[in-house]
Length: 193
Image 1 (cartoon, rainbow, N blue to C red):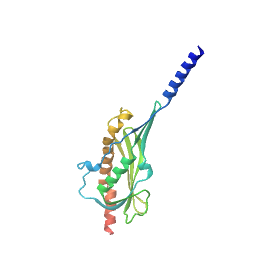
Image 2 (cartoon, helix red, strand yellow):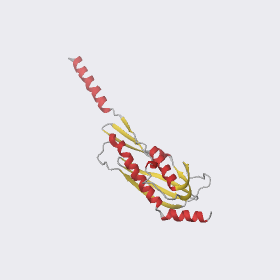
Image 3 (cartoon, rainbow, N blue to C red):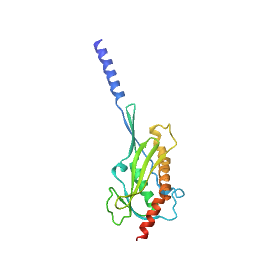
Image 4 (cartoon, rainbow, N blue to C red):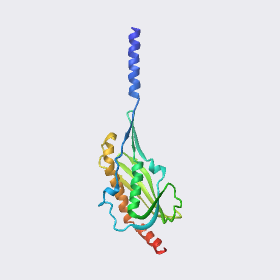
């Protein structure tokens, strides 16, 4: 009888350990390129500025993480945000050099810095800041990219990243392209060349 009780106790203990142990699920973010959307990201003439695009570790390693019932879901959006911010800057500005900290990288007219404010399941908030070489503020704006899947489960999220990224970078593109502050700064820089 004691042996039977010990056996049941062992099975119960093993079941408890198995149910308490969680798994980590890394959700793949589909590769998305702004260059595959020529109608959305079209520009007649690039902004005549030499830009240093500041991409720090916080941007490169940005991720969404959620723990639910012992399982952890991770969606690493940093590499895609890094790639798309580089593409956006290259589409909009005449010359772009990438750096990880604001520092002199040749002849630079301004520093453009994307900063991740928030990453949620169906939303990313990104702040864009443009500063002159002395790091005086020229322009700043915050963009909120959203996808239309509010009830999506984390495992299904990877399918919603492209619309989210497209929304985020479309809004960013339009804001920079139509900014009077950026236009006026470019005109003043080019007037003095």
